Amino acid sequence: MAPTPSIALIDLREQLKRIRSRVDWAIETVLDHGQFIMGPEVRQLEEELASFSRARHAISCGNGTDALLMVMMAKGIGPGDAVICPAFTFTATPEAVAITGAVPVFADVLSSTYNIDPAGVPRALETARRKRLRPKAILAVGLFGQPPDYDPLHQLAAAEDLWILDDAAQSFGASYKGSPVGTLALATTTSFFPAKPLGCLGDGGAVFTDDDDLAEALRSIRVHGKGLHKYDNVRIGLNSRLDTIQAAILIEKLRIFRRELEKRSEVASIYDRLIHSGVVEKPSLTAGVTSSWAQYTVRVKGQLRDALQRHLAKEGIETAVYYPRPLHQQTAYSDFPVSKGGVPTAESLCAEVISLPMHPYLNIDAQEKIADAVNTFDGSYSSSTGAGPAPARVRYPRSFRGCT
Ligand SMILES: *Cc1c(COP(=O)(O)O)cnc(C)c1O
Image 1 (tube, helix red, strand yellow):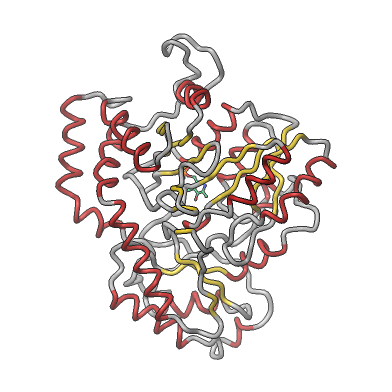
Image 2 (cartoon, helix red, strand yellow; image 1 turned 90 degrees about the vertical axis):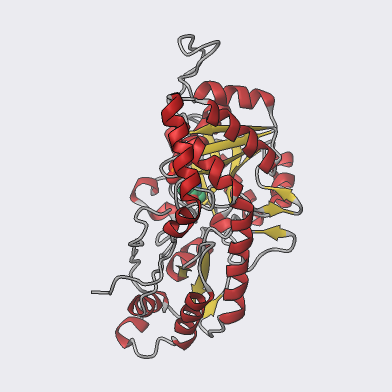
């Protein structure tokens, strides 16, 4: 059995330690005023999120999956519609499409950024039309913190009369050619799941948009499709509000978020400087794009990924595989169409990626130890695992089970 890791993948305790008294005070304030649902902190947080992201509206909700679903519902997505999604992402992305009765069509990703390949989208549209589906939208994802290449996606969307949703559960806080995430698509969603770059201490999410009508529909949908009030129901909605206590906690976390983003960038550049292994390919950012570094995910060549993961575990270094299987190979999604030509890059990434410890408080000693362990690994000692396709094994982080 592997020893308890001494270097955690994501260390949330370190952050909480630094802001604990303010978080305690924020929670106590909510306990005192007692407005647990849609209390004043929810409105305050939404204003602060809107100004942070430079989006006109920020609408908080129960979690990042509901945020995606609410946009689909507000845009009237349903049976007969197709939404183009990357095949390499977290389940929630296509799940939000499938729940509405629409069909996610899986497109391939780029090996350089792990994000949807704009050049592959026309093939996915062709597949959708051949299935007699109406393509309505592109659901792009900023995987591991880096926004996808939006310029060509917008060109395609304009030519094909599609709208774009930016799933920024991992990339909130990043930017694309000078524009912050929150303003890069018709709607942007994020998640405040604790392990995301901006996380609360439970579940939470938000949608960002400049579109007034969409914002109004979203505010209605999160409270049972309310009209003038909760007991006037003008559409089918959800119960998906952000708890006041979580909003109060997020206000405190947002205060340190910019500094934390800088620290994540520093951690990434230190990895980039220290890691020099022949079998490991480091992540790269597209010119003009910044990342919120939700994860530091490398590719391991020569089918050595699982062996490297075991090697690092022996050294007490916690890692994770995001994601071990592309969506179209998941039982629940195996009937949904895959873009013409397949998604070979998504498939090979699932066999090659591994995420190293990444959080704003990772210290230099830990990074040196991790880099050293990566650099000295060449896979030669693990003959039993070095050959043949490695089985996809996920090791969920001990410190943070359920980290997505
Ligand atoms: C975490 C995540 C979600 C879902 O967020 P929840 O708050 O857990 O519902 C959606 N998309 C991506 C890419 C994610 O990483």
